[in-house]
Length: 136
Image (cartoon, rainbow, N blue to C red):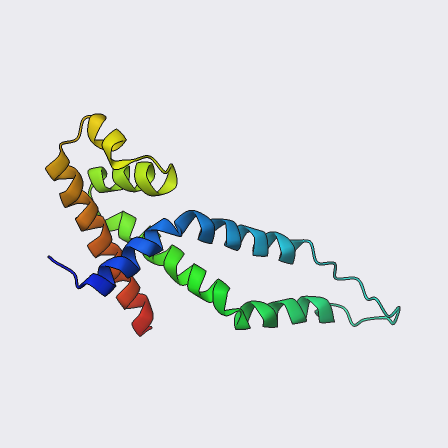
């Protein structure tokens, strides 16, 4: 299956940003976990109520467009990895996560045509998952 140039670039860039998206999600999670629920004003709070700082951070998370895009791309890549072959997963791990060159992957025992076929399979799977998540 051949993708239009724009869709191919979009899916390939999504794969390239995978590490960045993971780091962004972890940093935001760490920021939320570090928020203190203690009342700053010294006034007593009702039990089981949420503090203003936690409530404000939840609102910011829901409205943060960068985070929403990062989560969507992360989900698309993870779902696509469940659908592709072992060779495609190996290419993803080596090329996009470990930043090795295509020649290092090919020299590790994979033929050049298999490399290009499996990489195209991976990018098509990511593109399909991105389209599914865009519809929802």
